[in-house]
Length: 79
Image (cartoon, rainbow, N blue to C red; front, side, top):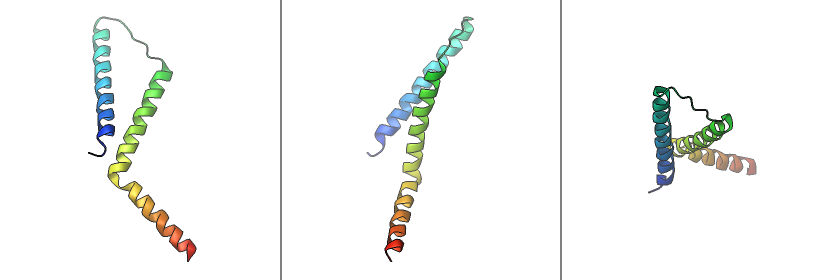
């Protein structure tokens, strides 16, 4: 099934985020504070954003429209 790998990766990221959020809640209840380095947060956000963008483009049909536009543009330039 096409796209299953992307879906599983997004699901794993969501599961990891949920697990982390649960850890934050229990750490807050214990009065402790967890520090996540900014570089780690930026890296995760970049990777997750790229996956979301890829999934959105795949299912919105924008890649097909871009290909059709590019093909039409090439034909008009040859004429």
